[in-house]
Structures are given as C-alpha cells and as structure tokens.
Length: 184
Image (cartoon, rainbow, N blue to C red):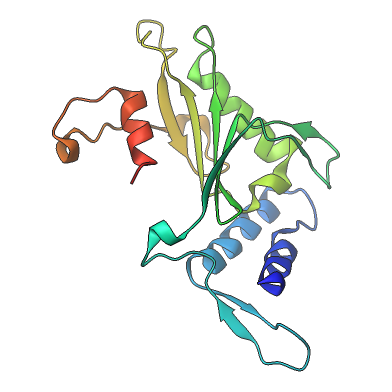
C-alpha cells in the first residue's frame, strides 16, 4: 500500500499552477480513483492494480471529516484553510465552505474559486465535489442555501442543493437533506 500512496502523491503533483494543468491532473486522477492504480511494489516485482476505494462495499472505506484544514501550496507558497474537507481513505474528495448568517453563499463560491485558481490549486487535484453553504433560513436576502459544483465551475453554474423528499418520504430542510447525503 505504501507504493500506492507514493504513486498517488506523484500523480497529484502539479508541474505548474495553470488552470488547465490543475484540471488535467484532476481528470487523470479521477480515472485512477474510480478504476485502479497500477503500482510496482519493488523493482523486481510486476505491477499490481490497487483499488483505492471499495465501491462494492462502501462501509469498508474509511471516511473522515476535518475542520479548518491548514494547507500551504508548494507551488504558490500561499496558505488557506478550507472550512471542511471530506476524506475517503485519506484522499480529499470534497471541500465545503461555510458562511456566517450575514454572508451570502456567493462569497463561499468566490472563496472556492480563489483557492482553486490562485491560492492552493495543488490541494484540489483529488477533489471531486465542492460545496458552498450558508445554513440559515434567511431566503429573503438570498443569503442562505447550499450550492455545489466541481472544481473551476463558474459561479453562475453552481447548482442549488435539491432536497431528496421522495426517497425519505418526509419534508427535510436543506441542511438535513445535505447531511443525509453523507449518511448514505
């Protein structure tokens, strides 16, 4: 497994901070994440395919959530702290930016885009899912809500979180619906 981790880290390194390079690296890593990673445990042994996630048995994966993850990008030298990072088997797959009740969810989206493009692009090479949220009920000023996207998605294309009332058979708030997504 050590050789698989080393290979994944090697694939996740960015040669430069261009948007195309981050996207290409992310897309290439996506293929490795959903299929397998070919690793050579030692020079005298053949390559082996390593599955990074157990899709057939999801509960066999290790899920972790970390708050205020401090990261210094090796390319930019910039520092940022995403509010919440969701890890599966130690791989960052989702980043969530939470905003205070007086700050619009739009500010969370802008913060994501700034982190992805300018501040810490290296952090987003494995991230597949980004969320900006203001879990208040102040819909009058369009401050509240949950919006999600993939990396580098322009703000106008971020999608509002849709409640899954059909499956659960009960009316759920945005925050309850969002949390229920991670309980599956």
